Length: 473
Image: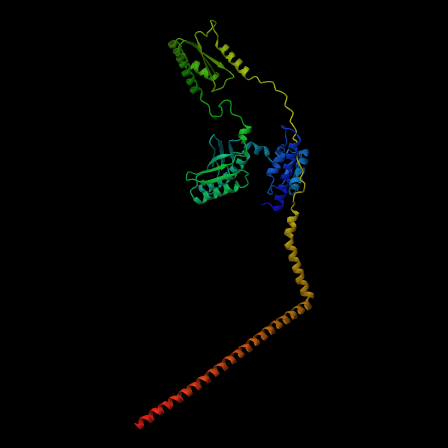
């Protein structure tokens, strides 16, 4: 949707940038920083500022000046959309930006009608489930499902852009019986994804109500860059219950104690698990000690949380003659954990090298929209000029009309006279040709008559001579 002048200007600017980079690379020896991309604000203005955006509000004056200078140099048509925010109320609080940012980190996102969408990124794909919940926007079940799915389609496209999720995406829409409603939801999904900068491929809703689509990975998603794996569940999302975990630990204690030359088995567990083992499973632990003839020590650690635990097996040659109590075992574990979590003292941050080529102003100003407006107003001027000419001819142009009419009539008369003379000449030539042909025919017919008379006379003479001879005989 860009004009030839804008594309040519952009090409000239990139060529100018490339020449500056090439020149800088020849002036210094490698390695050094030649060019570094602009900050995140300039990149956001460059990539996301479009015609459908009404205004861009900036609450920092120095950032406002930087953005304004960049827009004047590269996109002068958007200069009037860059505005400085000076209100006392914080910018994010005035437009509820904080709430919009929080939705990008939530697993469940609410819809205006009362429904919700649940986004679950997995290793293979991103699954999105749509729940109607308290949605009652439609008159019946089918209408409610359609309206909820339409709202969900718009919100899903928006969340994919906010979270920058890529790869395979599977959406479980609410079941819709009419095929017409399914086509409407598919069309709404495609329209909502048109403004996405990433390449998106959208399929059709299957008979199970699933829609498959793929989105290009432009960069790591928001969850990958701003989230950490849970240290307790290690990203699984769920943990085992206390009873299940305690029974699993007890089986491991039995396995370790059944090995040869085992003198002692230590179980370092959370307080809740230790309480369950020492009370509900006290008899089973005593049976293991009597059967395997080993010592079983259960050491509760307050700082440990489920499902973490540690089982230690001590051989007969590793035990010390002094008895070690369970609280000492817990203290040793805490000391080991503190040693492993000691942070390395931070070193001084290296000085960031300045780029050799920074922002370059274009050699020529960017093409503005004034030329387009002039080109668009040109047909209007031609229409007004035509109307003015018609009005002038109507009021004061009678003589000119007469002269033009007389000229036209004289030209027509001349043309008609020429045509008539040409026709007369053709007729005369035709008459002369006909006369010549008729004279020749008359001559030919007279000669034929003469020849016929002579033949008839000779025939008569012959017949007379034959008759006289017959009479003599």
